[in-house]
Amino acid sequence: MTTAESLGIPEHFNAAAHFVDRNVAEGRGAKVAIECGDERVTYLQLQHNVNRAGTALMRLGVRPEERVLLLMLDTPAFAYLFFGAIKIGAVPVPLNTLWKPADYAHVIADSRAAAIVVGPELQPSFDAIPAAGRRSLRHVIAGVDDLLSQGTTTLEADATHRDAPAFWLYSSGSTGAPKGCVHLQHDMAVCAELFGKGILGIRENDRTFSVAKLFFAYGLGNALYFPLSVGATTILWPGPPTPQNVYGVIEKHRPTLFYSVPTGYAMMLAHSERGAAGERGDVDLSSVRLAVSAGESLPAALYERFKQRFGVDVIDGIGSTEALHMFISNRPGAIRPGSSGLIVPGYDARILDDDRNAVSSGEVGNLWISGDSVCDRYWNKHEKTKQTIEGNWIKTGDKYTQDADGFYWYAGRSDDMLKVGGQWVSPIEVEGALVAHPAVLECGVVGCEDKDTLVKPMAFVVLRDAGAATDELAKSLQQFVRERLAEYKRPRWVEFLPELPKTATGKIQRFRLRELAERSNPGGRSTV
Image 1: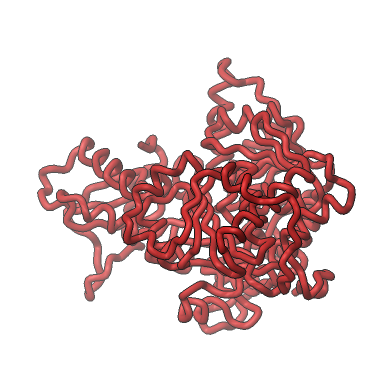
Image 2: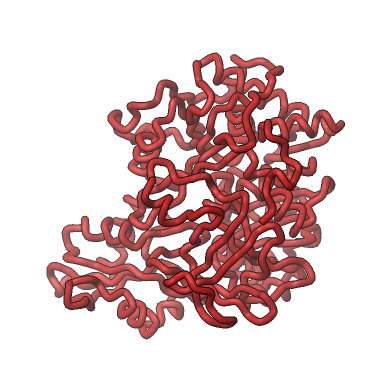
């Protein structure tokens, strides 16, 4: 395992100074760091605004290691606040912009944050949080421009230790309640060296565009600290990642590195294939030298279709919020479609059985990872930390096999969690939303593959009145969940059953539901 120390990261290290100030010191002040629509931000302007954000937070009384929540879309202001907080030793916490008010209330209470910065587009979501759910907040910052105007352009970075907390990222737990992964000052630098430079070969003349957003661990690397690690240019897009928008950004800004998730690639292909009849058959991805996929397994057929349509290689891999970015990946010149690739040099991997013994080649086991970007702990989750992180090793919760050539192949989850559009979904949380409907007696949710072999939630529902089962009610239940949970958690298909298969002790037999889902072939039907 490569450590921060062996990479030459000094003991006293501030990530904001490394990713922002260093570029100005090395002569890149006039180079464009961020493009967002028609806005251009140079490295010198980035530094000045980071300093303004940091000094303004200090004037508000934000202290080192206090949490600053960022409920913001992907704009330059996100970078200002993220690195501004880190520069003064505070801890920024990006929030998933797709969550519901109850999720934000949980994180506010769990993190005991001192401040929250709310983008104007997300103000309604914040306003819907009950007053009781905001108690720890001393400051609610709604106007980023007003905040920056209160700061100064000069700021000396706090003398943080490389092992001090730098930022948190919240990951969904097995019950749906997000849990905070505490990341340290050196973690981003480790990922930038091992994956950004080591696998992608990212360089100063690259232009990066990530469909995955900045609140997502994958997107944070893709669109922020990877490009800043080499003085490259990042292209931010705050809007929804529809195929039309994605193609529009690519054609306008001409990225050389493009990042998405398998669902995103499937949507791009579907839109492009419809375009063959004239809508957008002229899509030009010629500027992209390499595409990257993560978040969920990329089916081999989807890789082949994208490669054939656009002539661009897609390297797929696996990472996690806990490890911050990818630790196993395909790479240019070593792509095995359908696999997660090879171990990223600098990380170590083991595949063990339930008794912690190594499995044979080709045998399914539990994936354990060791790497110096793994989070320090889960905040307020002592037992969960001990169950998941043991010394240098973290149990990912994924089932894997490894072939004779060293390539890793995903074989499912060791729990019932689903990866949907690159984000974790707890079946228990979706079931909880469904049973709140007055027509529902009980239900079970499992993952099922769509026509592109990508996993989506499928709900099996037992009604209080079996005679009420109709297509209209199924759609109504989907809408009921949509109003209570993030859109990606909505069941794409709803099937009605007279009863759920259960064990003798009354537990739902999810494997039976998965068998039912496979037999019903929902992937052959359109989703709602």
